Amino acid sequence: MIGTALLCVGGLVVSLGLSGCSGNGDSRPQSEFFGVVTFDDKPMEEGSIHFTSPKTGESAFCNLGEGGAYQVTFPGGDLNESYEVTIKEAVVDTEGIPAHEMPPPVKLSVSLPQRYRQRPTSGLRATLEKPGKNHVDFALTTP
Image (cartoon, rainbow, N blue to C red):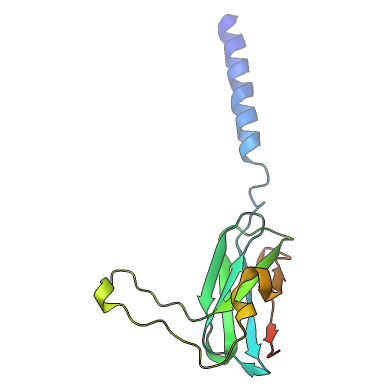
């Protein structure tokens, strides 16, 4: 009788544990922002775009490509959150390069206003509306 009671309680614990694991595992699903960045109506093919979640502080970035195209992926995105966005110089991978061989910083050939380079002043936002792909274009202008 005691063995049967322990078996039932053990089964209940395993059952509860499994139901807890089968909850909504997609509360932070993989998500992506993609689109085009323009500056004064011309594709911005140099520089980088950075997205930061105001909820978690996590950020992701990529260098801008041909036609001003970008694609940034978050392994776990914060749905319905308005991400802060900045546009900066291109990011150069310097991992493994000795300090005395570091390349100089990459400067933009356009006079991008300083406000776009900092989160508090950029005024750029992108809402992660759904899991998967979210299309957002950014049209930057000279003041």
